[in-house]
Amino acid sequence: MQHPGILFMRALAPLPLALIRGLGSVVGHVLFVLARQRRYVALTNLRLAYPDWSEERRRAVARRSFVYFSQAFLDRSWLWHGDPEVVRQRLRITGATEDLTREGAVVMFAPHFYGMDAGGSAVMDQIDRPACTIYTTQPDAVLDAWMQRGRKRFGDATLLSRTEGVKPIVRALREGKMLYLLPDMDLGPTESVFVPFFGISAATVPSLSRFAKLGHARVVPVVTRLTKTGYEVRVYPAWPDYPSADALADTALMNKRLEGYINEMPEQYYWVHKRFKTRPEGEKPLY
Image (cartoon, rainbow, N blue to C red; front, top):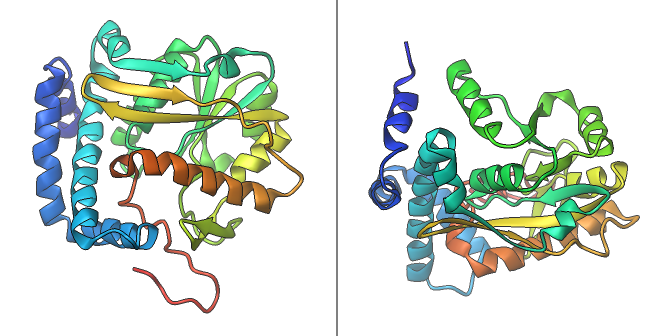
């Protein structure tokens, strides 16, 4: 028997984008009211990141964030099940794409904006080069298989399980695959370092610097914005000063540059995640 959620997404796929986005807007507003814990997390993150904002402004950004979250989730319907040509029309890559295609290994710094799945699909489909990304296995086997199929739908894409460790990732880079990396989450104290993020000490995995160094790769930021017509996938120029010999400084620099991208569209960042959950020893919890 088919999973009802997957059947629903298949049914949504051929509908007009405006209708899917309208449904996402309704769902987002409802979730903002009903999902009290996640609303609290998002508002706490925004208070920490933007202490100079009014509470009214933070609530407005948080509400829009829930809308974008819901719209991006429902967009997986057409992204993973829609007509491929329609998908391509809705995904637009701009910026320094030559930094993805020129010779040499590439790690794409792809922060957790809500368009991250669309950005990955666009790069893997429209950039003529094999790519890989790291994924976390989902508890539901049917949904896990669905998500894997969706993320491998376009291009020459390889999914590497987080549980497999570093070696397959480095091997893929040295074989010429691009790595689509999303390192900007709190994954706990193991292998994390504490560096500032919006002025708050945040547990951050130094994987961007580490993989770039081990794979002899340049780092190319790829930031995806949800737009009225689909998504804009912005490729920024490769960072000329990255990685350095200091992984801690590299990770702090990653967070600092990420702040700049977030400031351009704070309502599209993944504020529902407990980004400051892990605290330095002796500090009180923030949630």
